[in-house]
Amino acid sequence: MRPAPAARSVKKPKKMAKLKKTPKTKTTAKLKKTVKPKKTAKRLQPRAEAAAVAEQAAAEREAAAAEASRRARHLKALSRTSEAERELEELVFGDSLNAGEDELLQCLAGPQRLDATERKSLQKDSSDSEVENQAKSKFLPKKPAWVDDDDEAEENVDMTHRYRKDFMKSDAEKTLTKKKLKRRLEEQFQRAMGGVPAWADLENRKKSKRTASDSDSDEDDDLLCRTGNFISYSESLPRGILKLRTCLPANQERFADGRLVTVQFHPSAQVVMTAGHDRSVSLFQVDGIRNPRIQSIYLEGFPIHKACFSVDGEQVIATGAHHKMFFVYDMMSGNIIPIQKVRGVEERFIRNFEVSPDGSFMLLTGTSGYLHLLSMKTKELISTMKINGRCTACAFTSDSSKIYSYSKEGEVFIWDVRSRKCLHKFEDEGSLEGKCIAISKNDQYVACGSASGVVNLYTTDVCLKETHPKPVKAIMNLVTSATCVTFNPTTEILAVASRETDEAVKLVHIPSYTVFSNFPVFRRKQIYLAQSMDFSPRSGFFSVANNKGKALLFRLKHYSDF
Image (cartoon, rainbow, N blue to C red; front, side, top):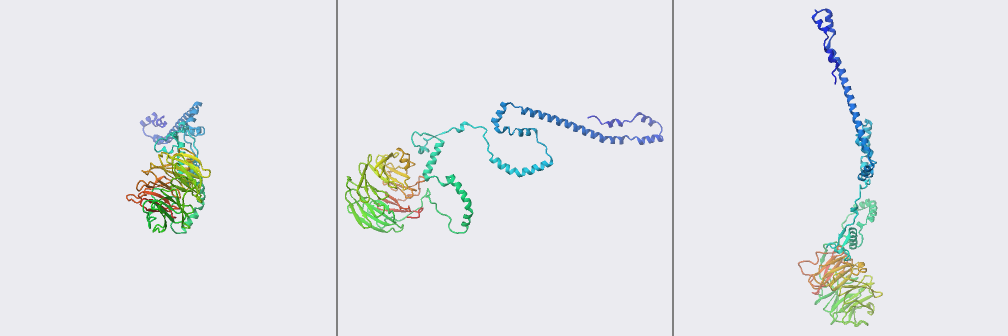
């Protein structure tokens, strides 16, 4: 900056210096009074400061103008992009680059200056719309910047692993895609649960939520207006531990002398029947406390091999161990009717038989693979069927339309009762010798027990289609041959047993295919060699006949009825 002009005015002129040498006069005194250099400097100093401030402001304006021109040049350089650069930017940043280009330029240009009124209005609007903008940002769809082709490629899963072997339908399926494996898991879950559960059905859940929202208030009012026990037991049987109580044996008032071969509950009355090698058939009333005896009959010289109620519960059919005749006991009249010989049945012994659930047929298992279908009313032969090999066990479906026959070679033949023709044949997986077979009351499962102790559990729809079906579960809890299998009426429990080892009885929870851990009771012999098993009509009781002549009785607490 240039020095202030007031500095030159401070120096005294030469004439004033000469006047000092002259004597003092009145005029010189007046001149001294009028010329006052100190006061003049004080008056000129504010003007110099104002000029300096003005020059500084001008310099700042020039610098701001230079900066603005520099930014403008930079913006022009940024806006001049080639087509190749624009395509690259669109690939990296997406299609929204053109829409946000102006915002990017404004950010580079710097913040805009706003007036006081504009600032106040902006603060009000931002405070009101801040929540709305956050909510909108959550629901705005975002497009992916790019798509990787490797993400869409299907990855194969090794099915030979021991945890995934059960999901293989054939040996050729050594690898499966993740989608197919997921579908297999869903199918197995639905088969185990008997369909899609309510909590997994999204459509029904949405509908129930709509109706539940309307009725929530009414239910709350009803809940507060009454008293009582609000906790109830689940309708489905839980897995893990089976709640049961050990009762007195069903034949407490008359034990059998020797092995008890049959125990069966009456289809309609609260009665249980026992039969054994002591040539007697006994009936007991089941109350879980005393189990009083109702009646006993004695068949002289006829050791009983098997006994069974008729469907209406009015008759008892009994076959012998070494006879080709059998007896029919009419409980209404009290008569014992011997059936000496069935015309057309040329068998040396008649031991095993089955009664159809509709009460129309009686199936005799003969030797050399012959199956004899009799009329239950007249006990006369209707037709004869034959399988390859020797038949060890048979079972009717619940509608009595089909017969499953299990051969000693491990093959299962499915017969049509009306036409007496073989509909299908399949092989029991891993079976060396077939022993027993059972069909659930709802026709959903088929259980096949073999001499190795393995009980394979199949679904009926798979057995009717495939010749080598895969079991949904292979029960390997028995170490000796499985000689008896039976389902409870609700198809929630499968009982498997072997008569070759003590305490060899297991109860399997069907939906989860797991064994109940608290049955039989450990560290205490109670069952010994199990010969026969049966559930009461509503699964309230479970009975096991053993080689000691006792029909052990257990109360299943989950089921309220007999």
